[in-house]
Structures are given as structure tokens and as C-alpha cells.
Length: 230
Image: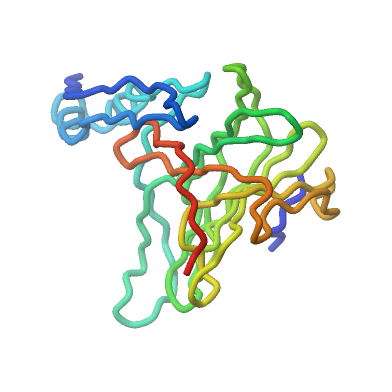
């Protein structure tokens, strides 16, 4: 794949069933999991905590949506007064896909892999799982996620059907920074270099909706609420 970046006791208080809205969005699935960690650790210890989180996965379009977990990385030498250990949640994304008459969904799981320091600590993620779903049929794909450096203009890249795709941003605000999640699609030849179609111009000709998986797990709302940045 070619990337741009070369360098026992479970208490669930509420479970809302996801369903398609009239506008093509997906209603939020909410899990009250405040007690999950404490209960699992108290009753069966550290090992059971991971098992409990696995039990909380939610099915959506054939995907098994996991609950993001906290991970830490050593940042090495940092400015005075800055914590040398970076701790962040997994950054998992659920996105719509619509290109050349084919519509579906993309789900990408990303774990913190290391910390780099550019003005301040920044996370670097490894993609540990990625899939597409069409009519509920899931296929594993090659993908990568970049958190976008200091400006946090993040993107997801993935290969499918002999093409290379990038979910990016069609609008930027002050300081050339994004003002909302990834909202559009760029299409490249399989080499990841030759542009086939740029759907991330100001006209946003290839719109997508990308939402992070909530900290407590569940299915994010995939309603398209895009507005250009100021």
C-alpha cells in the first residue's frame, strides 16, 4: 500500500438500538459504561478488563465496533513543564463511502504507537484493523491513519478495488486548520500518487461523513452536518 506519510460484573444501564434515519444518518448508540472498568477490576482483575471491553463491542453493518482504550507512550525529551508520557484513547473512525455508484461504510481502528515532539507531544498511530462494508458484507482492507501533526489536519488512507482513497478535509479555518472531522474523498490510482478525482475541493464533490467512535463505545451519528469553515 502507498501512503502519503512516508516518513464478571457488567452493568449496562442503557442500550439504544441503532437505526437508519430518514436523512440517511444513523442514530447514536449510547452505552452507560462508567462502572465497567471498576467492576471488572474489582471482581476479576486486570485480565478481565480487556475481556469486558471486548464484550461491549457493538455490531454495525457487519463491523464489530470496539470500545476505545487508553494507551500510553514515552515522549522522551520534552519542554520543561510538559509531561513526558502521552496517554490518549484509541482513535477509531467510522465513515461513509460513496464512489462510482457504490455506497457503504469504512471502519478503521488505530492504536497509539509512539509519541513525537514537535513544539509539544504529538501522537503517532498504528492502524490495527480496517474494513469496508457493502450491504452488510465486510471485507478487510489495507489502511492507515495520520493525526495530522500540529495542525491536526488528519486523514485516513485505504486501498480498495484497485484504487487508493483518502478521506480528508474540503474546508479549513484560521491558520489552515480543520474545523470539523474528515468530510470528503480523494481518489488515486493504486500507486497512491496519480490523482483520479479530487472530491475535496471547495465544492466538496465527493462528500463523506467520518465520526470517531465515542470514548464509551457505541455507534456515532453519521448524519452529514458539514458546513464550510469560517
